[in-house]
Image (cartoon, rainbow, N blue to C red; front, side, top):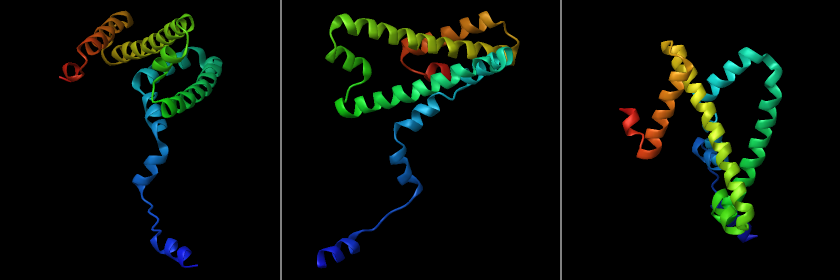
Length: 155
């Protein structure tokens, strides 16, 4: 009985707002990453033109996002590798190359939505044509990508 009493005495539960953050984990960061001006502008433009006809796309993509992020988070926790590293390490080259190419195409597709959203924002702010806005946004993204810094764009 003495051991149980010691455990009760030494147990000092903490509860604070910061303690909650350790349970949220990377999910919060991923969620915030998908709520950006490019997505909002693209979604609003598509919704204003097509109404609810594309709502199934949002539902399906949200479900797939949850499944993929959950599985990739577990992969990272268990192996310490990102998805592309694990694909290269554990799969034969004949399978890993097409998988990595499809992942790159998916990333490019996501970037296209961001570029379109930025072009729509430039049109809304300055009345700039969509094509010129898309070129400006693409050039800005390329500068950030190849300079590996955001400080030039921030200035």
